[in-house]
Image 1 (cartoon, rainbow, N blue to C red):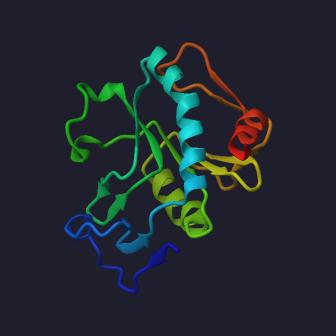
Image 2: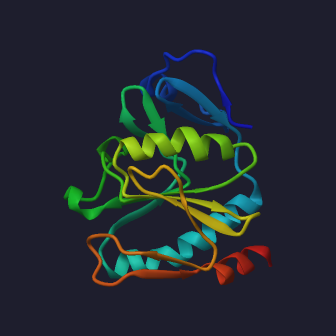
Image 3: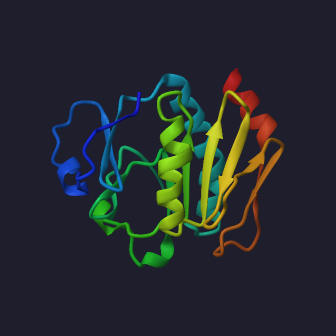
Length: 186
């Protein structure tokens, strides 16, 4: 279960210094969140989403499609480990370390019972505040994707089709969500 610590004075540097113990550590506005390793179903869903995105991102030179574990420091008191994320090419050369990543084009989280509250509330607010153009929450159980953009007060809930067109692309990516979720259930 994603458990926030009681203290609100955690820094990204302090979380990075914690020993490698199999948990994922995130700091959201000074609050430490500890999450155990994801379930197999979570990882399979993530793999299927990644498999859909990778060819499009490469073909349109959108950026680098990466996944956690990753220590992405958005500020001195904010460290995130998104399930899947796109680092835009406009940053110049390929990132050489997590500290090189200062901008995100897309962030995707696959919901787990232990992370749902943090993904939908705390992380969403962090990503919106940091200007991430698109934040997708993949809900395998409900078979939908919640799409958030900066300034949104409510998500766009998509169950049939997800259309994504980042600024670098000349044509959109169209995801057939019923087919994607059917593959996740096999």
